[in-house]
Length: 184
Image (cartoon, rainbow, N blue to C red; front, side, top):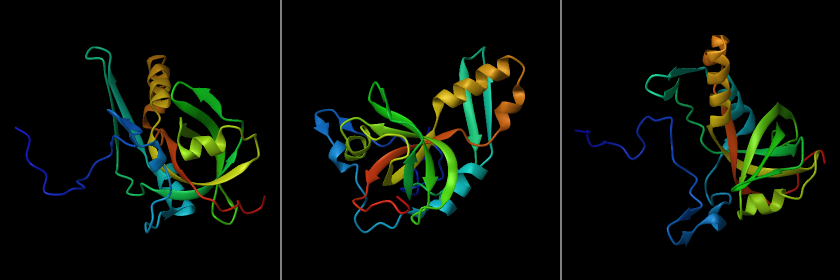
């Protein structure tokens, strides 16, 4: 029996969002900054993301992989996304590596994978950009399952230290701001 939660926001690491289509409801137009919500500042949020240790456990026998980490608590962050490459088309959107800058254009992180969901305002704004171009965006972190898989495969080859590296994450871009990037 599962106990009923006493909170609408219990301690957790895993969330299922953002949802872009639910049954017959297409909600991709809701990928925009949240009116009245103050997102976290880039320096504080990315310092937390980058500094969070994780531990990956896997079992070939039960065919399971578990990622253990402390909670982040910094779900929504606004930052400047300066592309390191043009976005690459994937099945349901685009992905690209980008530098993360704060709102004043100062570099926070050199290389982080960004995910843009097909048909959303962020994907529409970014899909034709080139390396070096910049957008002001709202993002949320999520586990990068490709990176989790890579670390597990490397551990199977003897590189077990990869299982205790920092959190394997990427950023889902869930909103784009109309303002122009600083230092452009």
